[in-house]
Length: 400
Image (cartoon, rainbow, N blue to C red; front, top):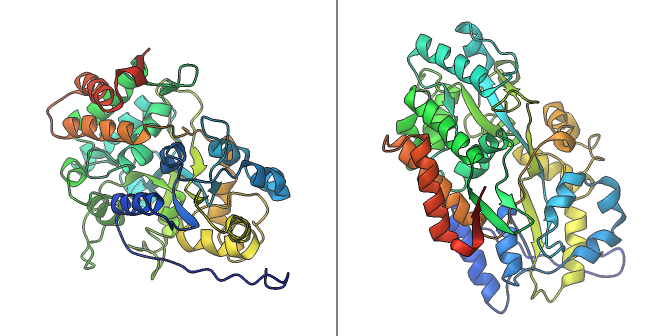
């Protein structure tokens, strides 16, 4: 912009806070007179912020940008559109979530590493693994302490395997009671009853530490070797770099990562086509009160183009939201990310709607009852129905 005769200074405000504290901080900023022009956060926050009037409608700006329709993946463009038909965000990254597994551990125990074809196929392998190791076999984020991750990294992938509907777009209501929901909670109930989940770890204040870090890597934070358990976990593309990649970025590096770790798509309940989760990771937004909307949108275009984007996604292991930077360094040096990017057009997802935070809370509450041994799958499904109805209000929900 300076070269074009318009000098712009960008002031970066950064802090290290937990997700919910960040959300509260951003909400207070939006309610003030001088909120940040540009902010980035999870896509599930956008519907409520947009409905509250905090975000600028950027629909026309996106459509006027040739790159938007020419290069951004359709699934990501669709997910920016809110209930009113307008777009208030731009995808910062794409992400694919799958089941990651320790191939070396499964091979050692004689467990097939072929793609599971159904829930029953997967559960049979988990039981066989548990019988041989006497340890938990799979991490699926569950309970309250994982926060929104219980839904985003766990429940929704199980639910998508049922083929059910969670939000009825014909009535604009959440479906809180259905056979699909019962099936999903019974999946958790089966895993818990058979000792396949790392129950104690999932109830930990920071459940990702004893599961995706200690358990999956087989080392403690101080470098002590421990059994790899569970050796199977839900995980997004960021795991290759942010969680298990080499230091200093990787939180808990796994030596020979690409040899030891592989992935499966999520199997379905009835044995249909396995699928991956395909969506945005975080979104860029512009405040409705921004005094510099033109400059803010130009900044977003810059950040989502060429080298700037390649550096951003590579830093944390996410995927390009557009199809034309696969040859741009440093992204071009990470073929395992590019391979996952190519799955974006074929994956399943669920677009967040107003009230998603209440659904996330109800899922956390219900799965926690399973972890505590207080409820089986049927009971947890009924508990979810009641919790979601109480949180959302009876006019916002329906049964199928």
